[in-house]
Length: 146
Image 1: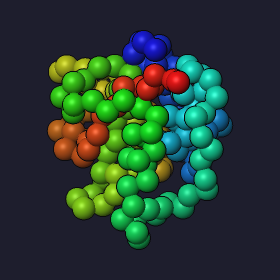
Image 2: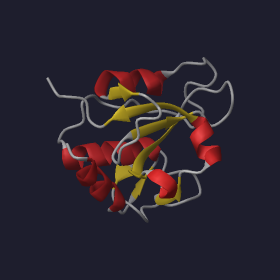
Image 3: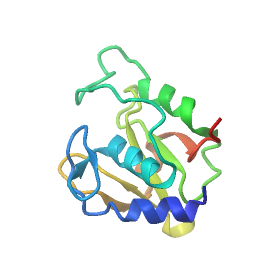
Image 4: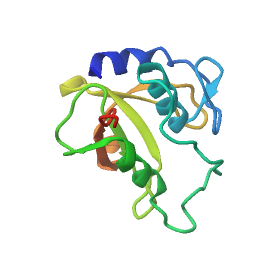
């Protein structure tokens, strides 16, 4: 799948309200819902059902559930190997589990990513130094399907 196709699909979600656990363009999504929706639009059916999750999911147990799921369905890349369409996984606080996702839109000096987060609609944000410091994994989207 081309990075341009992934970014184009993700940009269609810009303006979608944040809604925890949702994944419907124009109606609502969270960061995982954005990734799920783009997956459906560019690939087809989601690779596995997503169980219900709370806002603090995985934190009490220190469980890297999102990282494990990404490793099942995406191809891990070096953090510096940037390309449009890459899936970015963020750790929002030091020593916290990684649980925020975004899709890289642009690279270089004007690098940006598309994401959804609480209190905001889906947006394209600059991939500034504070955001870059939080990236813990980068993946090619999608992994080759069997």
